[in-house]
Length: 209
Ligand SMILES: [Mg+2]
Image 1 (cartoon, rainbow, N blue to C red):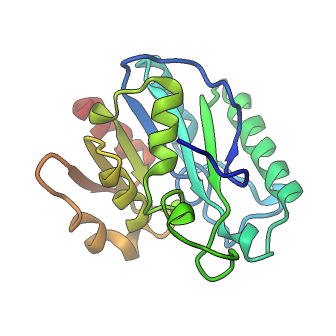
Image 2 (cartoon, rainbow, N blue to C red):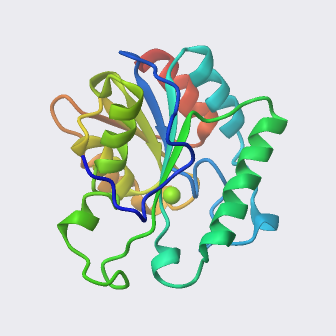
């Protein structure tokens, strides 16, 4: 599938994990503490349990992928260099805990701020599912057995659209306010659960994978 130039990948060559399930993580409010339009690397702080969850995913030989909407870029609130500095700081803080994600994909689009916004953009921006699908294709992941952890309804909807097995809403970030709408996205063949934090998410996923 064609990838718009503006879609950012931490690496063009993530590890192949053919036939393995994926652990997809949202970034803001999940991997790192929610900061409105995070643009200063000094404001980067891993959520409690984030490094442990990524480490567990690797221990289970899951593909570990961060999928993040970054509309602050389209809005002119976050520059690309600032975004890259934040990403480097997240990588550094994870590395300090001895872990690394396989891949991060970021979508800078926003319907009100991206010129000519259309279906080609909406597919990538969550609740669109193309970031997940693209990661799955690059890494050979089995999306039907994969899970996502997010804090917004759009994360859960993207997981459902990509055909994942299920999604976990954490009540960190915006999760508390999104709980009812997120749980309502459960469907036959798509499980949704809400848990307090990433430690509980891992406990749930240990049984669910
Ligand atoms: Mg979020």
